[in-house]
Image (tube, rainbow, N blue to C red; front, side, top):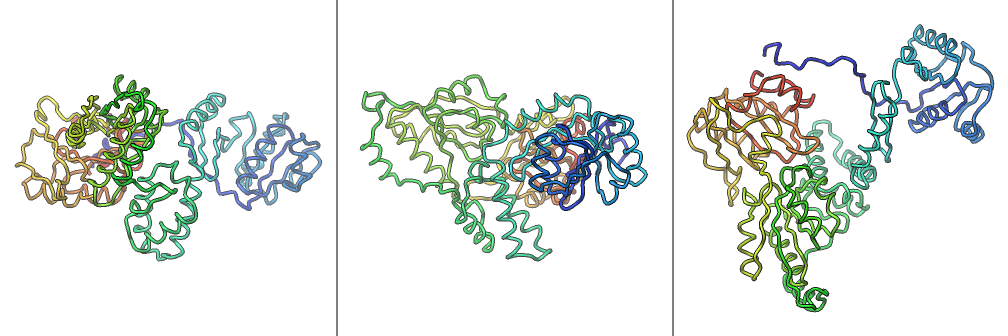
Length: 513
């Protein structure tokens, strides 16, 4: 690979770390409000905290009285540095801060001097804490107040119960390691937990109880799909008969008044609420209930204020999940409600939208159609891949990675000016590569895995037909994703690819590898 294919570092940043301070001694010089903030952060990290100051503010006095900290009631002495793993100064005497910092450097003790940037080995960031989840924002000491605003914005976007979800997944992870401790099974543990974490909404993971964790542990031991376990007391779907009886016995006011329900089929696009159409936004605001696909991103669901019924997952049997949604849709329509059926991407591009139109039409309901951006075309574009480009690609072929019987797709012979987009196929990547190789697609053909396009954590992994499997094996995969094959994959400049469309874990993984 040529040197120009590597991303150039941008100077001026900090090395962001999570410092393991448990049982280490942190010395804090000063007894005011700034020192109190430093003490609180150190205590949350389970450090042993020593404070040196002639007097303490009310908060620090409370912590000293309750034995949370050790207080030396005097000014700093050089011997206070003995045994310290870290030193934080929060005093108004800048000359004394400089003297303390100089001694720390001589002893190789990391030091932070409040409000004196050039003395600091590190800075404190604006942090959000929710159980084990910690989010820190740094402006590299340029705009601390603005860091607080950025932190609040990030924290407000987190799904409700994020910290609890992490705690409960951590509990399950520990139990899995107890029943399957072998280091050689690390990848199996990771892959299984990845499926669990990627599948269930964070809010639902937060509601898991001990029985749910027991059920998930049993599923892991049996190597069953984690999607097969019902968690957080998700109620079982009603049978068509029960649903029909419920509707007939408990009709809504709308139905009682003779109001007929209405149905709108809405495409959710590629994941970003800002990329929904204006019509889609309006329909979601005016809906009485939204019937949503399982993979609708949380950011899109977050703009909905009415009830959301999410598609149930029947592992290996997508038709059963579809039937469950159809039953619920009919029940709500019979009550005179405005029903929005929210489907990922565009409902008519491998979204089974046509099947739903025919189903509801057979029951006397005609759906309105609100198209959405299809990931097949717009997903690559959002990640820096134009599916057509003058002189490079003049045609696009979109196929599904599995037909109705789960078989591999049929692909035509290789054409150098065609971009091939394969949906729902990343889990079958080795089979797809073999399929293309057998169809005479060249080993050097650029390939990309486009992951979670339109979401804040979108990512692109680039390689060639011959190297893509090894590359994905090395960097992992974040579902959902699609495969793009063709010379248009790398038609944009390397700089554009690396600066905008790759994260650090996959930097440089494109056709030159």
